[in-house]
Length: 163
Image (cartoon, rainbow, N blue to C red; front, side, top):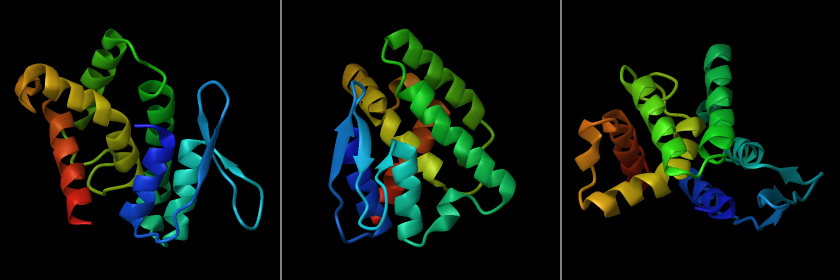
């Protein structure tokens, strides 16, 4: 999913009625949002955090200093690890690492749903869907190394379906 499509979907999920227009810059197609009253905003996580604040849903950025730091950590992870890799081996490693991390957690920060969960869901969507297409069953491969990621994926999917 391209960053502009992710940001548009995030706007909808947050209940923002005014659709922004996004451009992209550079070889990696970094999203850019031109704001009405200030400089343009650059980067998926920067723009996403701006949208969360615009929607008055700051709790998605974390409610304590520690949780805010963990959210920021996972937003950086999304951009550097998930977006930065495309080979099957790299993605398999990312998925295994995430699965291990999520083993004793409900969400990435523990028990609270945050922007990190949303953006990681968007970033992993294409890989989880490709597993479904290859195996013919959503969680056939989960028994090996993706069980907790699929739980997270289904939880996020449910969140978006009820919005």
